[in-house]
Length: 168
View (cartoon, rainbow, N blue to C red):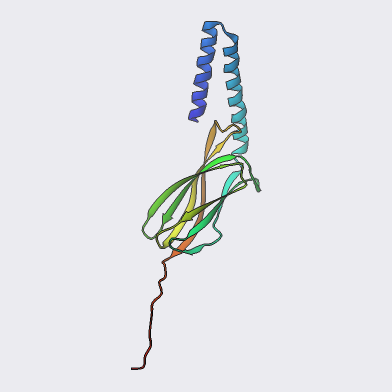
């Protein structure tokens, strides 16, 4: 929303300067900025309601220190959506309540995969909290809250122990 206000202020200033200096190309530039803002606003208003995020972790149990692949899907009306977006992801260990926040930018991909290394054993919740959906040009964005949670169990690392059994 802040970019829209900045865009309106710039367009208004350019139009004011065009009137003061009696220079038509500056007024035309101001009109182009306003038209770009209207088109991107209509696109975002149309795209935003049906968009949701799907988080998948193919392996829901792993050992500590090993990497897992987390897949993010942008879905609109049941199909993958190829637009630009940024997702805010929270990773929380539910045993000691430590949180880690990540931002993942996705542009044009149907499925975005990133690796995540969990160094401590525990029960983790990987959740998408919020998404910024961008217009075609990547200038203006609209925010949407998303509640999508997936769980991962991280087991402690196992070390071999030499055991000798004898009859006593």
